[in-house]
Image (cartoon, one colour):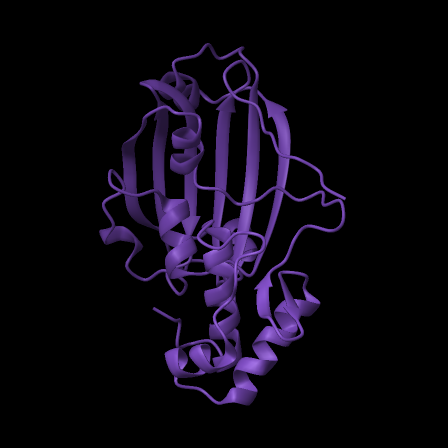
Length: 236
């Protein structure tokens, strides 16, 4: 469902971006016509036209004269990593995915967290901690804080049936993301849940996602260095 808190043209943009981020629309796939989007969202043709134009400027879609609009190919080298659902990653490798949920709760944002999420200090935020498994082996420890304004029903989600990443991509469509990756030693809890020793190096990704006017989430994702590697490809 579109987020009605966003301006109408941003709702259309967020919908298209969500389909691309979830892998439902791939490079070369047709994007629904402006007439179809106009009817789907109940907005003016001008509103849809603005959304599609901005998506084209951002390089996400290509407008082909006489053929409509399609999802764009990657025409330049990109240094970004796609925001991917670990469940889909594991399935693509032909393996089974499972999740162990440790914590889903409300907490108060301290000054540092509030600044990152662009909230007031002491604001209520949602917090979840879980471990993701590949064929029964723990491969990711996920510690995430979520802005309730972006995903108000987050605490009621059954994360044994879906992942936070997939849920947020559907409910708070991604418009921007930033991340950092570093090597670090795990905390005692992380080492225990990942079944590794405290001195075993890990890859730690800290990722902030933005949906429209809201910072949606801040996630700390810890991967055992000997079991996981980040991968992708460059295209010209």
